[in-house]
Image 1: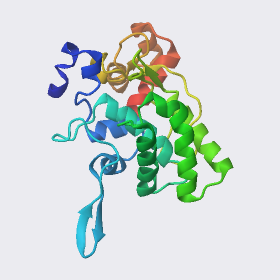
Image 2: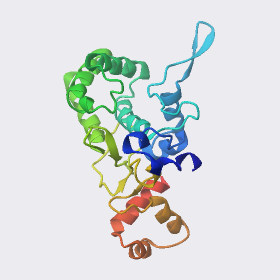
Image 3: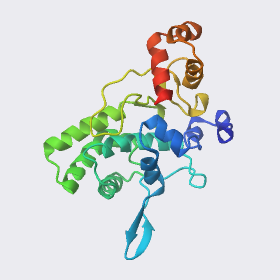
Image 4: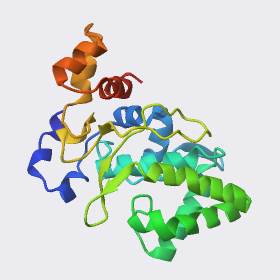
Length: 240
C-alpha cells in the first residue's frame, strides 16, 4: 500500500504511529466485525432531541483524515476487544471507566499504557464493577480475560508496544479465547506492520497466496522451511 512505503525510513517510535491499516484490514486481523471497529474509531450515530448526533470515538486515530489505524491504534483496539467482549458492556460505560483511569494516572492512552497492565487494570475493573454493578467475582473474571489479551503484546525498553501476536481462532463473543501459539506476529518495524511468521519475516500473505493457488501445507512447509504448524497458523491468520 502506498501509504506504508515510508515506514522503513522511520524509527520505531514514529513507525508505530504511521497509518498502516484500513478499518477493514484491522477488523480482519482482530477477528471482529468491521462496523464494530468503525464505531470505536469514528463514533456511532444516535438520535438525540430530534437530531442525529455522533458519539465520541473510544480510540483516537493517529490518522483521522484518512481513517487508517496505526499500529498503536491496532493494539488499542485489541485491548478494547477484551473489554467489550465481556458481558457486551455498552460503550458509554467503558468510556467512563477508561476516563476514570486516565484521570487517576494522568495517562493519555490508557489502553496501551504499561501502567494499565499493572495498577491500572485493577483500578479499571474496580471502577467497571461499580459502573455496571458487577460482583467482585465478575470483576476478577474480566481481569483475567483482559490479562490474556495483554499477554499478546510485547513492549520495547520504553514500555511501548512493539510486537503484537494476533489471535487467529477467536470470534466476537463473550467467551474467553483459549491460549494460542505465537507463530504469527505484527510489528511496525517489520514488513510494514503486516503479519509475518514469527522469527522469519516471511509474510503470511505470501504463504496464503500459494495455498490458494493449490500448494499443499506440506509443500509450503518444505519450500519455506517452516514447521507445518507455522504454515497452518499463517493460513488461518489470512483466511478468517
